Amino acid sequence: MKGIILAGGAGSRLYPLTHIITKQLQPVYDKPMIYYPLSLLMMMDIKDILIISTPHDIPHFKNLLGSGNDIGVNISYAIQPEPKGIAQAYIIGEDFINNDHSMMVLGDNLFHGDFNNFRNAVKNQIRNDQNSKAHIFAYPVTDPQRYGVVEFDKQSGKVISIEEKPAKPKSNFAIPGLYIFDGSSSKRAKKIAPSKRGEVEITELIKSYLSEGTLKAEVINRGMAWLDTGTPQSLLEASSYIAVLEQRQGLKVACLEEIALRKGFINTKQYQRRIDSLPNSYYKEYLVNILKEF
Image (cartoon, rainbow, N blue to C red; front, side):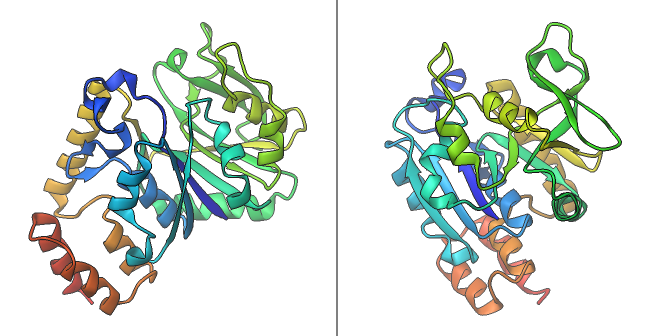
């Protein structure tokens, strides 16, 4: 399975923070925001990853992450000239996807929790249900009117309806920015007519699977937290959440080098070389301490 991170957009809700640099490079406590969606893909055992961003910001992502070799993954980059909708990512990334399954996570979405159970549940569902070509995720919220809302059969996971910011939601399950589609995603996206706001809407791509009966919803259980970091308030809340976790436990969230080492993407020698390349910092001290366990 391929991985995609859509890290484009104007970030207008975070202005003036985003006047100089994109929101996905803003700090969430002690790491750039992009570390969090990237860590999710790594925890899902995905090594081939495409980052899509603006012409202005792609060089910054390359400077931060490079080829991904230091953390045992392969990172490619693609430009989104203008923000023309989330589903545009599947058109831009058509050659990268190459008719394979893909998991896309939006660059301003933060997931944290029991990734092992989450990963196993998703993989088992995909493996055991050959009739499903697409999977979206359902997260219970108290204010579903603010989100895209999914109504689904809780026994089978079969999706019944999808509504965008409904006045009277049919469920309290929001759709977070995480999607798994089969290899037909790019072809489907190219057939979608732009909406009134000139965007290739992700809702329309999802509905193309819904109309075939090949769309399933996976509930994100209580062991997982989902935070959207697209506003000043939510960015602050996400930073506070990560700060409390790390200070209480003494363990870092979304530490890419640690994930790579623990999952066997890199060995201890490669890990040590990565440490040696870093400037003196609290982050480097943490990596040194992790190595003592091996």
